[in-house]
Length: 342
Image 1 (tube, rainbow, N blue to C red):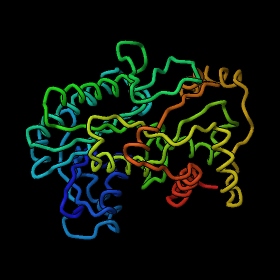
Image 2: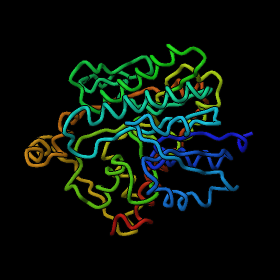
Image 3: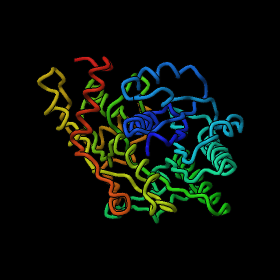
């Protein structure tokens, strides 16, 4: 029974991890979350108060990706681990190792402790960044689980960190027979937020609703709802055939114009006027000379990257919700929390 099973969720204060925690609680599981410090514990318990149905259903322990301390205690008495914790770039980084080392060392610390504790299965959050070569300009190619990003190439710190950490996980499991692993590799994750500490991936919605941009660059995004990502984690834990597999978790490819149309259709009558003018590529390239964020995206203008979710649908029976629901719920949560104004 779900209510007899306690699951460890690493990095429980992260955006995806919080949705994983909530999904598990709503399905009747008990959750032990790891935090780098106790300062977020009260906030998290308040957020999930309505999802907790029994005393002790949600508990937290302290453990850091860069230290081996605390992980043995975190694993005690468990069968399953969801390793969700991983660094996400917040603006400029000083060195690739600022991302790579926490991802790599954290994965090793978690798996070593899991093996020592006799954990039955680990479900690890990776990313399509571990599959896709960002240098590719082939919009016809469909990326899937057999594809790997090459960390020996100049592909950027974030894809390197994801590829190296996931490779390390598969190598560890291969060297330790009897331990099961499945990885969840989501595309661009958006959805409702809990508070002001939300993922950088939500910025696309917030910027459009605040009219931070004068118009719409010719960009496309493969999107997936964070709630559907959370559901995929549980399916990968409970589906026998998921062991030993990667799962590309993607819903739909939308252009920024298509996202803007959905937001305008739903929120315009509430006083949120979404920019609808398509910006020519040369304007974005000119703008990138003065804006660091624009500089990061100009190479992607006009490119479309496509992924296959066939394995997740077939093996996990995973079914994502309509992408329009995802976009509307994300926007509404920003409004409800007062994070954007008319």
